[in-house]
Amino acid sequence: MTVPTDQHKEPKQDVTFRIFRFNPQVDSKSYFDDYTIPVERGITVLRSLNYIKEHFDASISFRAFCQAGICGSCGMRINGLSQLACTTQVWDVLAKSREPGIIKVEPLRNLPLVKDLIVDMDPLVDKMRHYSNWIDSTMPEAGMGKKEFLISEEEFLRYDKATDCILCASCVSECSILRANKEYVSPAVLLKSYRMNVDSRDAIHGQRLAELVKDHGVWDCTHCYRCQEACVKSIPIMDAIHGIREDAIESRGMKDTSGSKHAEAFMSDIEKKGKLVEATLPIRTNGVVWTLRNLLPMAVKMIMKRRTPPPPPLVKSAKGIKVFREMFREMTEHVKQDHKSHKK
Amino acid sequence: MKRYAYYLSCINESMTKEVDRSLELWQKDLGIELVKLHEGTCCGGSNLDYVSPKHFALVNARNIALAEKMGLDLIVSCNTCLMTIRSAKKKLDETPALKKEVNELLKREGLEYHGTTEVRHLLWVLTDDVGLDVISKKVKVPLNNYRIAPFYGCHILRPSSVLGHDNPRDPSSLDQLVEALGGKTIPYKHKNRCCGFHTLLVAEQESLNVAAEALQEAIEAKADFIVTPCPLCHTSLDGYQSKALKQAGIERSIPVYHISEMVGLALGYSAKELGIKRHIVS
Image 1 (cartoon, chains in turn orange, red):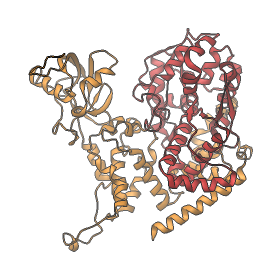
Image 2 (tube, each protein chain N blue to C red; image 1 turned 30 degrees about the vertical axis):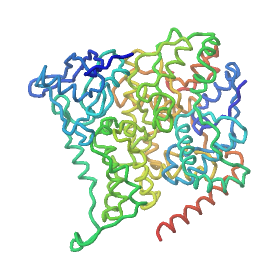
Image 3 (cartoon, each protein chain N blue to C red; image 1 turned 30 degrees about the horizontal axis):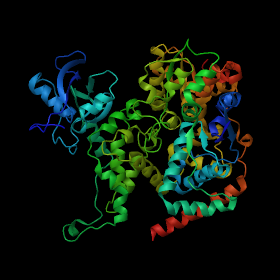
């Protein structure tokens, strides 16, 4: 029999927080400081950081506000993964820590560093501005405030999840393409753009979309799903990115950009042969000149290794292609019907 | 002998023929038989899903239904085909109206999609069905002289809501396979990162940067080779390697093997038999 006690005590464990430090005013390069504190189960990384700041080193800088996973201020990399410090439990992180008893805390990636765990969010805000991440209302100024601007539930469900974004920039920090080029639009901005573009109250859909299909825009996403996997609100960000692409193909056509031409090749090859005709994919995506200039040296090496994809006539169609093609084309009719009834 | 329906990936039929060639060599040694699905079509390569979600559902419902008709699980050896077909399956299983619409069309071919067949990666068949113990026992030429960088690629890990086999933050199945073959994996931060393949034709510089980073870490860690379960990652890391490393100003190089080749080497087949000589980087 257990004896009831007045005080419920959680077990404690010594945890070392290895915190990234860099103050551009005094440091020539970054370093890590270790702080070991006893931590009970149920304590978050943010509470631990506050404790360290209060009791050990007041010079550690980090951003935090709501402490409840709502404001999105305390995004940082905890043991390598971008997440919110306020909703991340120390003991959970510890259980998966490669170095026992140690939690490494670093600033988000892909944004300029300000100091310690603080990054500059301005480049992200600038991109949101560039891609018009707001609603420009279709309602005339005179009508505003006089009647409700209703949307259907069906429409709302299309962007319900996207509105959960709190701009914590965890997805930005994890993005593979942004890591390779800081000009890239970034997943959070694509998500917001999608959310605005599917809103029927918005008047600048076409203008926003025209910007999104340009260089460093929606077609540069490499489908790595790191953004979606890191999202602290479990938003299916790739669905939004695919949504913009689907919209781009529908409203701007399939010959619009190299990205859409590349995507279209899959559709037409599957219809014709059931198989992708890889040999001509670069030409169909980027034209002959680009292909010769960019891929010729590699093509020579591939020929020598007998690694070149077969020319189109030698790509064997999938077995039973005739019936398959009929089904495929009938589905095309279904899609046309869907679009018609959607427009009504 | 456990039988599986084997999905023919477009890239393995054209640029990376060595994958299926090496699998043919050793599948019976490990007690598995991969029955080629010649009627199968391109999965859409992570593109058809947004070009036309309904065609995407139809094409992959058919791919799965072909395996269901044979009463076999569908085995895939390309990460993107795996993710794509599994995504379609999830969508079909969650959307009865779509499943019904697709099945109406599939009737023409005497097919019906039920959703009963599992869609799995070859790597999972090796670790879960054949078993690491059995594989260890079959090894003739242990890989104990090699330091190996395991590159998982994206679409065998993410989105985890569709894949769900390995922990996407710290995957281990490929590491375990390497160890079962007597090899040693290096700690490799890029193991769960991207190879850049899907934008090679659209954002080439960015893609090459992505590939170069993964190659650089393996080179600097003095790995003997990189191994990957995905022929698309292989194409990016092997085929585009010299271009990627040149752009990054790195002069060294590193071979990249498919898992089917690595298993074949440990089972005693030669590099020539396995098609390793076809790689761009040797």
